[in-house]
Image (cartoon, rainbow, N blue to C red; front, side):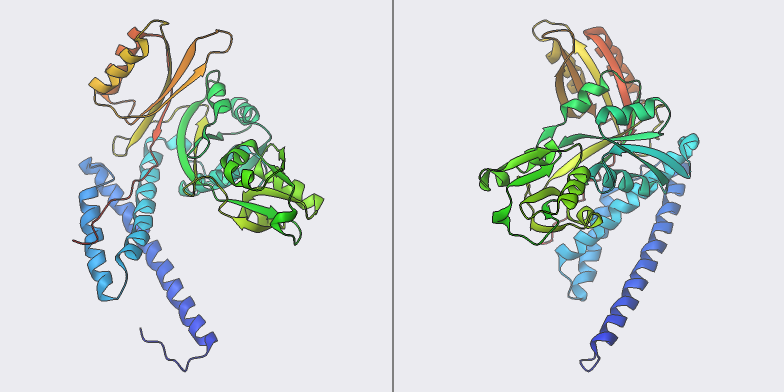
Length: 392
């Protein structure tokens, strides 16, 4: 399309809006077609992802993009997002078919903090993919989140389990030892920490910071560079932002998300303050009943086990997984409360619980361990981008 240099700015903006609306309509049409693809795969029992076809698709789109003077990286970035959405949309549809009792138009969801907390953002993002409206239940602790679900006041609970910068969230792992809830889903949420203030101020004036302990830890290098800072801990980033909004002082700030800060009238004075620029938190979704995961989509199974207190006991268990060629994505140890020097091991593996191979592995592990329990089997929502060589 050629832009008339004599067009006014308003005319140009109207054209941009028209194109944006057309793009949205086409994306919606593409989503509908992806659903038809999912339906066709049911009869053929083909998996949702076909990365060979995805690679061929991306290479063709790169060539087409070059004809329109579009950079290959720009094209792949856009279509990686579109493909991810298509995969997750198909997975959600197939899961509704095998778990019809969970296909509710409205769900009660408990999470940490008030509106604007990272747990709140993760909850909304996760259930938006399921086309589910939320009744939101704010909680002040991880224990409260679990209690709300255990008592039936909430249908689901959303809990952060690990962060790429600060590592595992031990309190959540400890709570999973003693709950009857099942893990039914996961979502990885990008964490974009900013320094937020309620009044116009300078970074040098800040001497007090409010946030949840995790963001303090995830931004430790930046905070060290600020010198002597009074770090105040809150139950969530949302509570920290609310506190700073109420104080309205030039020397206080909160660590949180910039878009969430807008809810409380806060503005960022410093962005990208996390130790790692690629900062993500993985959240799990828990419910009172487990879900069935269709064999057409990738699944994860999470289990906990306690081994005998003898040399090589854990190694023997891990060899069972290796010999079965099952990929382990997480191994975390936590002390067993009340049993000094005894450890409980949390294991994430990339396999469906219903798979006969996994059933055999569970039998083998049961013979080798003092205690073993499956915490849940759930769809894997980590859609790894298909790689392409721009130089081909």
